[in-house]
Length: 128
Image (cartoon, rainbow, N blue to C red):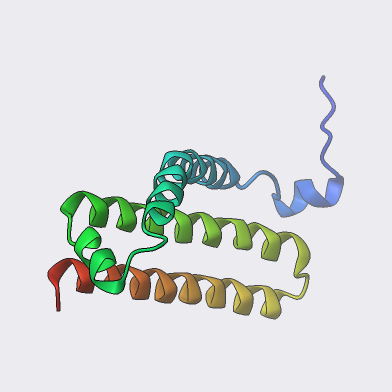
């Protein structure tokens, strides 16, 4: 007979691995891997535009490749941020109401900032 490492209370409550952490782990790693080449592209692009005026930056952003890479950078970055902050909240906010409030706020702020940044890129892409 094998002994379980679970406490008797955990056995009664049926608590155990929720199996949700694996997906979160891989999504965070996937966004981190995507951000490596996108961050290099972004840094080199910004460096090349350091002395450019607004018109040159807008002209550069009107390239479909630049706009696509910028939106990809923004989506990966904000998604990665949301996942990272979620882990911090889950680990360090102990009150259930405060934890749920912080998780909802994290999602809403991430979505709002991501949409605002993406709409800014689309506005420059479309030239309006």
